[in-house]
Image 1 (cartoon, rainbow, N blue to C red):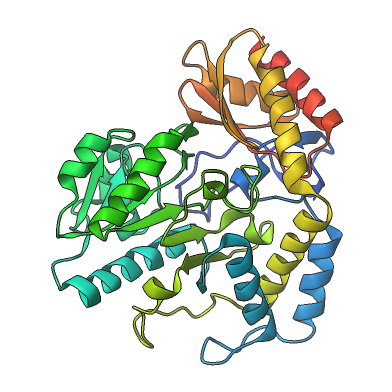
Image 2: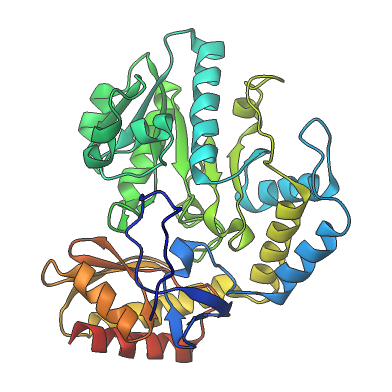
Length: 386
């Protein structure tokens, strides 16, 4: 493995000593020709595998037709994708962004605008959960329940409160006339791949209904089939007022979306929010191809089957204390705090994963991963643990 000099890049990532040059399906190849089984998928982004020909064809066709007109005008791919997302999510309206952080930024702004219009100017606070992650803009960082990530950028915007996940009593005490929204992930991905209890999520929904508080579900990492349903809340029997989606939506091209019910979305008026590139025709064409492939190839069903296989295989390995998560958003909790060492060893053995906590390794392979690839991935991880 070799790494190219990165003198021109800002030092914001601790990059691994490998330079990838090609991908195909569940596989990556470095500049030395070595193959790697990709069980990280670009951080839960590559939903249908690397270099999928349907995405390539959709992008090439749209690039040859129309690339950009701005949001002062409509394009067919944007309108079609918005309708498709509304259909599969059960929500009504869509605002397109460039990534998950800007989708969450839009969600926060929409919640505040709704609160102002229906309850007055003091309805602006957002309550989120400890160990959550909602992005790295100043507002989404303020909503992120990880003090270590916030410390460098104080003072952060006001109006954000974090509470312990799973503690309904404390949340109930804090929701008051100033609370515009409760914001959460059903699976705290960057917090260690921690699924929130189903009964807690139902109780939060009931609390929001009783108090007129909006429920925002951040499905940036858990959405687009990652948990075995189009969106993570769909297996729970609840629905948000606002939701966000991003990562896997265009299989590696930059896109995000904020979705909302008709009632909530109507709080926005022209000029309240905007974006130059969000919803561009090329990106939307890619996303439509992704949704088509997930549906036509049965990847939601495959996700559930490969999840059971991967969880079962990982749980039998010596050195793995617990396997948690949903669908193909999983983490193996190790018996000691050596996740960085194990992730590095896995890379040496041709398996791409990452340390999401000092004692936990994250697995987010493509939804298209095969049974044979899962078995091979388990074997390579076994070698990495040795």
